[in-house]
Length: 182
Image 1 (spheres, rainbow, N blue to C red):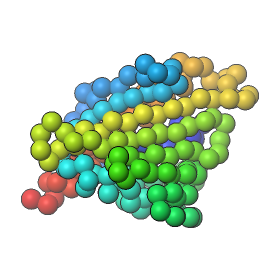
Image 2 (image 1 turned 135 degrees about the vertical axis):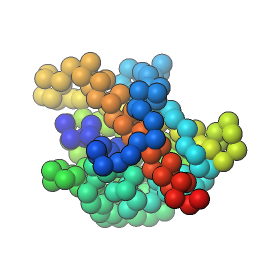
Image 3 (image 1 turned 120 degrees about the vertical axis):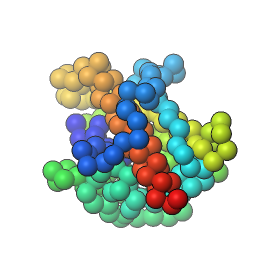
Image 4 (image 1 turned 60 degrees about the vertical axis):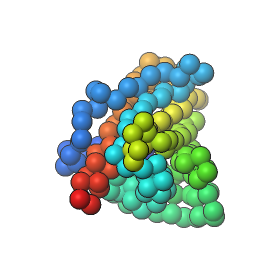
């Protein structure tokens, strides 16, 4: 079940992180395309290129998503990377990233576990210059024996919680980064 506690799409929880606004104001919904996808959006107070560049720096995920204790990049070739995130409890998430810089999209999939999990995080121009609209999609489908003990509703709730948490942490990180620069 550790695969649901990654996103790092999108990926972190910590009482020591100040959150710019409550997670309740981040809209999260089921995808119209696929019942196994949850989507969410928020606005960052930074331009899309800066946001994409920061999130494409895997080492920075330890700061953006406080539940990640260690980042190990085991392979990186262009837009593809193999990255392991280590959590404080010792659990590891092994991810394959295949980013799309021209679209400002971070995309990754979990390469282990009892579920198929992938996420995409898009950094789009906001309505106001110098802001970014972040749109994330998280797919999770449990299979095998795990599907007998984990209901679809539980998986949906976990996706919603993960998307909301990750977007909250992104917003907090970029809110602090912008405030620190001024």
